[in-house]
Image 1 (cartoon, rainbow, N blue to C red):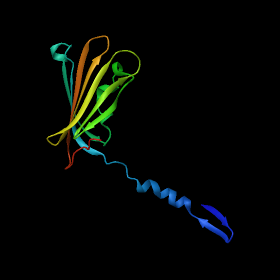
Image 2 (cartoon, rainbow, N blue to C red; image 1 turned 45 degrees about the vertical axis):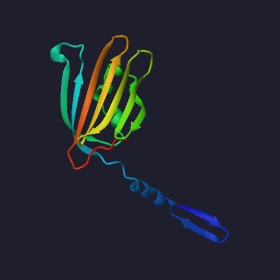
Image 3 (spheres, rainbow, N blue to C red; image 1 turned 45 degrees about the horizontal axis):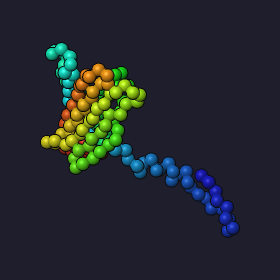
Image 4 (cartoon, rainbow, N blue to C red; image 1 turned 120 degrees about the vertical axis):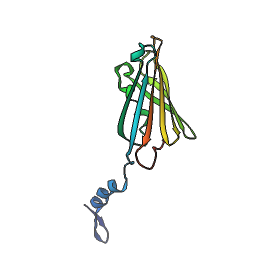
Length: 149
């Protein structure tokens, strides 16, 4: 609480109460429950190791797409992130940006398809001529779908 002194006297100012109410006004974006299918394909590996699939129930937030690919946390992609966002209709594209000069390149594309949100990350590891991809298919478990933002 603060007090303002004016020529006519004192006026109590209750800034403290007003400021404590502000966080209640700004609601965080809604977390949406999804069934998330993640497929990782590494064509340079032996037949039985080339393809992995994981399925999980996960809460996805709008705006989380650049960080949704689990492979981005792997040590081979340390210093890499998705950036340079480009939008068109129901699609969002990203470029894989990596620190240093290891030559790793890649792209990611997210799009709406048949009520699902699908993302595909394509990566070429620098200096090794090895490629891999990871695809995420997020199916909403409620009545809506994930906003592409």
